[in-house]
Length: 392
Image (cartoon, rainbow, N blue to C red; front, side):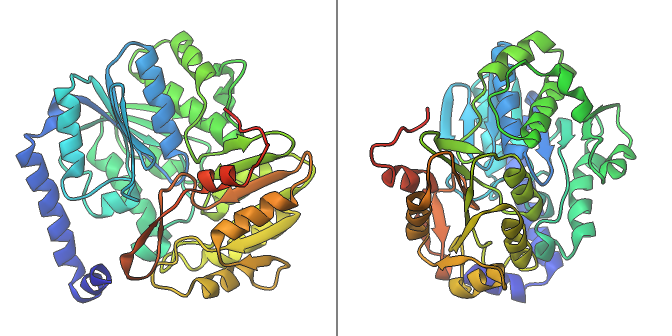
């Protein structure tokens, strides 16, 4: 509540100066750690966390000491910490502190997920990126940025400020804007590079093929062989809450973070099964209200049974959000997300697919007055699976 009042009352240029000053202070306090390590930054709407994870795995397979930061977890060498901040790119000097910790741990590489909000608040400033990567772009955070063009400009600024190695998804409709920026080296990739992959990739969906190709292009830019890339990817199992299969017999239950129209459609398109039973998260309160009815229509197009439930309402009325997602399509509305998950699993028959989207591995549900309630879609699924096989 206090944060929202501050945002509404303090001029934007003062907020921007405040965030910029914090980044500068962090760099000074931690002695510009990015000058002592190779930093790889990954930005885009979708796939960032998975690309960070896959890239980190390949570098470790190649024998390098690494650190990584994503919306899912932080890693420094063999230590892993769940990201419980509900922030992709933490503020208040935390990124600079993390870089210094990676340097102290004798890491050669650090792989960072770089969000548009992090860029907007200058959290990427004073970090020397050796490699910057563009995965894809679709409408997201539009209201926070004041339009799609501003959202794209935030992503582009990362490339304009770091002109060493640019790795760009040429298949994205916005790729030209990124390719037009000067760099010492430009590396393009696309779905036609799938011949680089191992024979068997343990990740669902064409979007994960893109993620794997992206990781390969990052690794080969640093001299890692294709053989090492393939060996690592053959062992890759994805990350919690990203197309994570909780059980696969007698029916399948999957938890995924998808919360944009593009992400949701790609998830649904990647699934087979006799029927799709979809528990649809209803968008965070106060953010990107335009996409609520769009998500509902996509679910209506692909799902046999739709349950719309609560997600992160913040200070909005959660039932009103659910109604906006539902529109006039035939759905079941269950405000209690735990009950919604239980109902979906109870409806499942052999060979059905239950897909629960919107939160992935997030550890909190955010409600009124900035209160955070401990949460786990994955654990709630497991609680409602008596005598059923949990996937490993």
